[in-house]
Image (cartoon, rainbow, N blue to C red; front, top):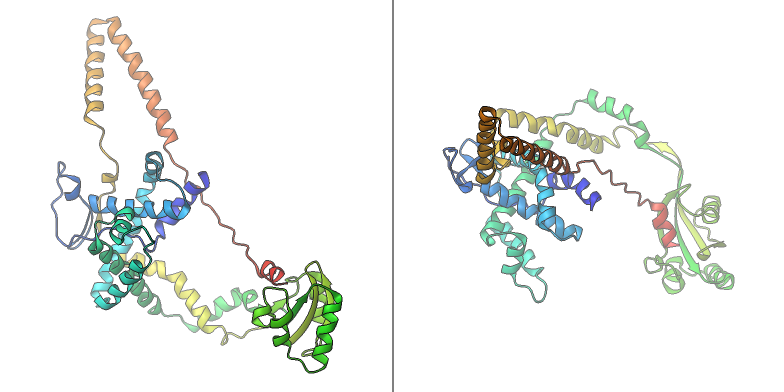
Length: 396
């Protein structure tokens, strides 16, 4: 559970599908005593997000998150996740700025596209569950609510593409980035190979004999290989040194192109290997990587563009509304304590002293609770080490 909470801040910000409630396109006057559904949390021109809409959006998001993580959304967990509302608000402001930009640029999505996406969701309903129940369980008020969410999500994605494509990259910037990241464009020696995995050395020698007789390597792999790559003709793709187990690697890099070698014994069995291409080490030119590098640089500069849009949008937000006011009972108790303290000052009674001691104890308890409620916001660096070595080993 702690790891789940550590990752929640990142997941909440980058949630893509379940973004939540619809916007209210009217201006609402802010009042201290207004009900939640009327309290304006964010306003950009006539585009308004109320506190109620934001909370509904947040509820949908954490339901989706809990379901994806396979955890039960208890009241305690919901309370702990609520500490991430400020970060979620920042993301929501960015989304609203991008929605405004999409409108200014005339970017839209057709009813037919939305119908198609909703149709795919309807088709995903599991046996024993209704479409309406699926929406209700996810926190939606109905299909129109879902439709609004899907529209917003698609508009945000489309305007981001337009903004990124509109960022100009000069030749000097491209050259500087190319030289700074030259190691990314340098490729080591590689071989591209197929193999046939067999259980015994005798079987492997039989395959070699069939190949000498003119047999097709891919067809023999499909017929006789016991490895998972057999159905694809034994295809392993291209790999550099250090990606395969040592005996297989040594035989592959020593082989001549289009000349089967084997049997090669590894812990997986006996291999017959066919290297069909050899790639010498080298560095790709700047022209070869231009498109890739330009996209990378545009992606790095995109946050600056969005930040500038946000600064120029005139957005108003009221994050203080995310902190609920103290219940009336507590306020009444505090007033009572204050009265007792005042009485104690005037009369010096023991009752006032006892009240003061109790108030001090309560204050200490509240401080402890506040410390516990601080939440866990440590970053979680999800190491993704699914390199091709493991995949290649599995293939063999």
